[in-house]
Image (tube, rainbow, N blue to C red; front, top):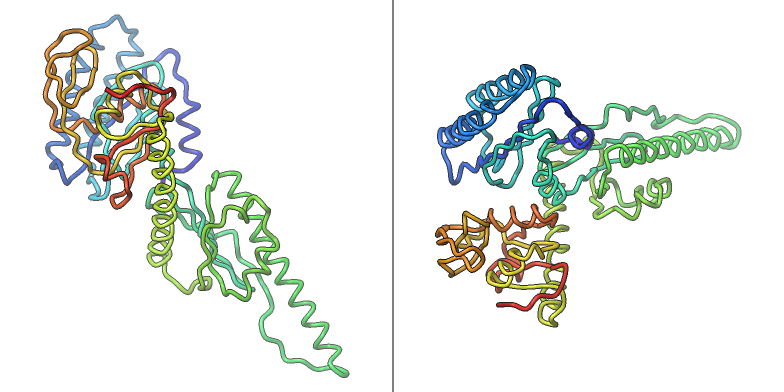
Length: 384
């Protein structure tokens, strides 16, 4: 799983004297074979080698880059690419012993960058689309906590063992002993709930959990929720009638993913409704490929909404980057435009390069009526 700590390590990594190699690799096995993916990486490495190793580099810089390139080639030869991995991002700086791999559920555009800083912006734009969830299963005696991010699950329950007394046989004068024992049990239960709530609060702060799912018996959960911090309580998106250790990890993961997909579908649907309304009112929003390309060419996209797996054919100017659905000659520099089977990656790349964000929108949302693409813009712009 991609942890918040891993992301922070990447963002904070600095290499002032030795370059960093950043690789973005399309690994969508629906489009490419493993051999084609490996060949693409090899070609990018060979092309970049010719450029950078002929520059004036120090011995340390040259040796670090050679090790980076060899490490990348070895990695891609040995890597068994999972079917659900659509894209892969790798950062390497051998002189600083820095190496990170991100396996992503959506595709990326092939690129290999050698620079003093890691090229993180496209990765951050992808990661920002996903939410980190915690699935908390709790009853009066036990608890489990699972962290979920980008379709992966991590068990965080190892610090949650508690010893709450179970059933007790009573004896004593007129039930006084029974009442004392019951108070003792209730005290243990509330301490158990508080301990779990404190653990969740720590996890929320350390891992930056976005939303929570609670699993438990409906008649018990209100007592547990009483111990939760308000920030946690406000981030609960679903409650499920189950109990700790009632489900195996696959069932927990599947349930959490279904809840997350439903939640995100509803959220994105509302965003698309606002997008459509704003665009129809002439506010800072556009719909359809022509209008989006016009905004992209102006660096005007603040938030791109694009339907997953949508194919958007058109033309690109390889000289200045101008994008068009129909134009064959670039109106900016006069260069002949190259026909592209799909401008999806180019639109996303343009958005990210101008510090915009984007969401992949699942099929079935009303954006399909507008060619599967729209955008919130930074300023109003007349459509062509």
